[in-house]
Image (tube, rainbow, N blue to C red; front, side):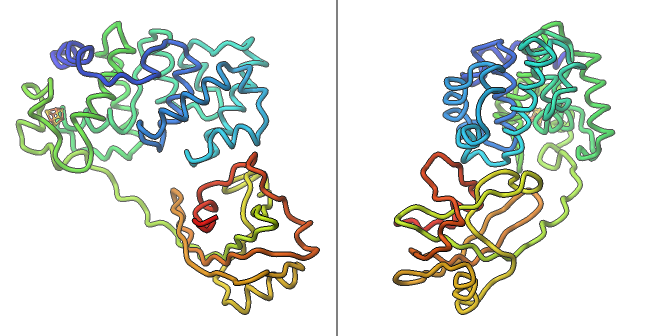
Length: 336
Ligand code: SF4
């Protein structure tokens, strides 16, 4: 197809120079792809470089402690990604002799690796002719073929995967990266794409029809659920008091500031602390904070104070080696 040649000729002279593009190491490509899910490229780069320095292969990742891994991930959010990376690394060590599987179908068996990530690793690191279909690729495809289908529909994704598989060139890794790069830098989301700079402008059906700014079609997401919480930012000799969350559910196994559901009044917050033998020293500050997860929003009332009392022994004093997820770090007072 003509667009394939145009895209393949465009990519070498126009792609961004990103650290994970300088390697064909499947482990490095895997780590970068997982980090890039839900996180912007510019934000990922320092995390990726530090992660690769400290955990350069699956064996190192499988052996790292959960606390250290969470600290390396702190700020990227969506910690289940890190958890799945480690679980998959353990599987790579126990079942695949420490080497990343080299086939799309086998990669799909690893925790946290879906069709897109398996396609990216298999095509870029092992040259397997298999597509990597993410939101960027679906958007480019919908516009290129002026296709009004709902790209949130899994059946549409499967169809795009099959159609791209049938036409992709031998150099599948470059083709996949070129599709992603065009979607990220030229055929951009949220409004008008940069058609004037696009290598596909003379073959693009949506450009011809004037529908590029209207595509892709995507079913509206359900609105997020709002949960009210009260969070306590309590300091014992300068260190915030923490608890460890359960190993299942939201922010599983991470450290949290003590908190409870609902919004407590100042009197209720004082009672909450008294019941736990925690006694504020000086002023009890109160302010609000908010954190947005994929499906939930936390609207939080925060009470912050230095505390004393026997109850402090029931908490973990933060010593900097434990990651505090953003949902709680936004509650810590800025002047500490
Ligand atoms: S011409 Fe415009 S709409 Fe078509 S692929 Fe290029 S940037 Fe996207």
